[in-house]
Image 1 (cartoon, helix red, strand yellow):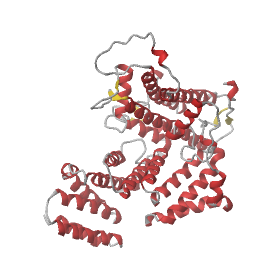
Image 2: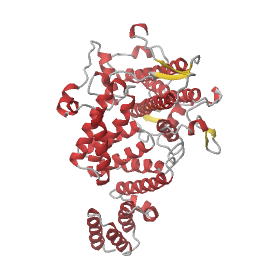
Image 3: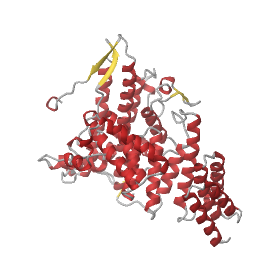
Image 4: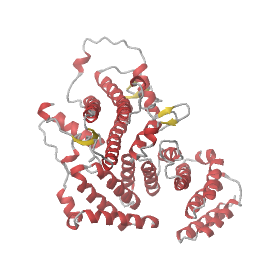
Length: 516
């Protein structure tokens, strides 16, 4: 294998791609392929052809490139230096194939498994490696964010764009895509919509300034123009905007409350739409709710569903409180374990109130997912028996044949699809399946928590790992609750547009703090 010749041809191909001559680049990639069948050749050629096939809008080139990469994939990823880019290329290949499917069928991503499941998996696999190239790492986060966004998971997408910007603050595509995501997010932001629109405008302006992919310039510019039509120019001045929103202020004499607020802000655990802004006091608190619903005149659905949402929110707040209480060691809870006799099982397992608080928090967060399913069963009138309602089964009219309920399918609602996709990530081989296994162990068996644990799994881990996984679960549940509210918002907008005389809009009344 002539390494120098391979590198020379690869550089020539990349130069041709940089000037838009993708046909010549394709021929150079095939020249490299003819030099041999070594896995390193497959690695280089497949990466080139995936990008070339996408640029030429040639689906077959991308399929051939994926087959070439997968043929030698195990040999390629055995080299830790090559593995991240190999996973990245494979993810991009399947992402491009999904784009072709989406063009043929705009509904392809709704309520079914798609190639985006592979895209998520491979990008996250790439991120498991110690990637020194910040540009590559940033691009992986951006593309993962785009994947989540295509599934309706705008909150997850925002988190990915923020990670990309941590790697490379001038990542144009991360700035622009975050701006677009905030633009959509602003629809449920109520009185704070203007703030989100200004933030989106600021991000899109930065993106165009630092540079983005040529094919996105027009769309980013159109988004900017649409914002400028709805916001007076004087408010779009970045300096004036930042001075108006200098940040939040934690105003409390209680040290524990201060700790709680800081913990929630740091980990983005508040049930509000300001987690990705935090430029004013609106970032503090659990403020999301269903403000309005259109129902038949004598129907109590609005109050019934609002009552259930209140319960979901309170369950979340309590589970979060238990987690935070376990971490606040200024409050000594050791007295709780006095006079509790515990047998030493000689395996190093820890048994104390702090560990049990974390475990109770984990279980509490997970249980909320089933309550979200219960809400959907009522709202969509699915007619599922209450004893059979859970977050994994709510979607299926027939789980065996994978037939989705018609009421769910007919919504074509991206936020409902986001909830569906999250539920699938808890299935075997999904992103969150290990969390599901931990929950099952906590509920039905034992999770052993030790000060040191050489090999960690779903039932044996350190306290730090259990806390980390509980925060991860909390953020998944937080996003799920917000997606639920966004789903209802979209459906109510649809409903209101076709209101006849038999339906009325009912508005929410909030309970003041002193009456809770």
